[in-house]
Image 1 (cartoon, rainbow, N blue to C red):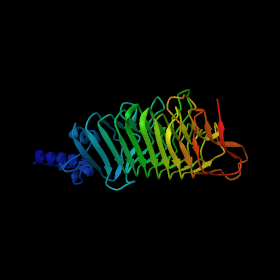
Image 2 (tube, helix red, strand yellow):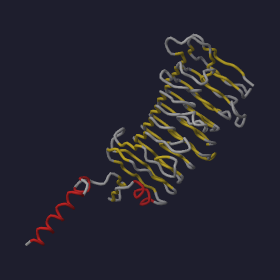
Image 3 (spheres, one colour):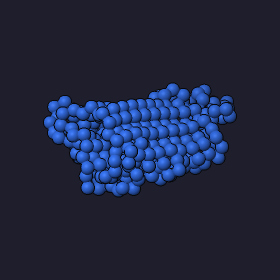
Image 4 (cartoon, one colour):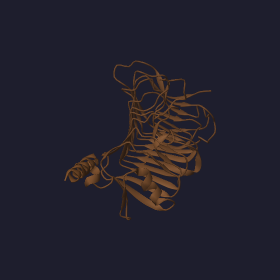
Length: 315
């Protein structure tokens, strides 16, 4: 009887030690259509392998990260804004490290990403096309950081970038979005705010389209440009709202064209129907578009506040 009592007590203690989720809740990462669910995001990615698949992500806060090395994978929140990846990074890079054939990220939140080299990101895209929709990137070193893939395109829509960027510790700066040499970058109906250094959007893409978005630098700290087309670019920047704040590392321009190199053609770049102003109480002179390309840009009717010159050619 004494042995039975000890066995019963042991079984009871083991039952109490099992996490509540394991006693009835479904694992949070489900591969759509397969009926398989996983406790680790990496296991769900590995289950898709070189195929095509959608991973549904339940509401909750996760320290998970994952590396996609093949296939086409969509990471989709069950409820936008309720699936949160908090601080977990893979390879010292990001919550999602993507180098497969294609990737989609929908409705996820990425926060508190920090790594030793100062480029902790929600997404590190190393190759392949990417679509990001209804995502939130906040309070991290970087939102989206990419490598080079001139044959691929990146599209960001209805997403928020808040409390990102840094230029400290003697390391290269981090930015809200920083893309390498991609074929194209499209950002639409998105919001950038409260930067902590670097640029809000920096890209080496050959073609850009930034439309119907807002860049609110009112509460920014030691920030630089709103849009930095580092090597020049063609495309369209239209119907955006820009507000420059007080605490700037560089307040000389809102948008820059080819400040680092004349690598891409910039002739025909359209910048039109935007609104730009200084935050209330700021009295300074600045420039809306600063151009190092010396190519014919197409500047349309932009509504500019006091103290903002429309255009300046720089060497």
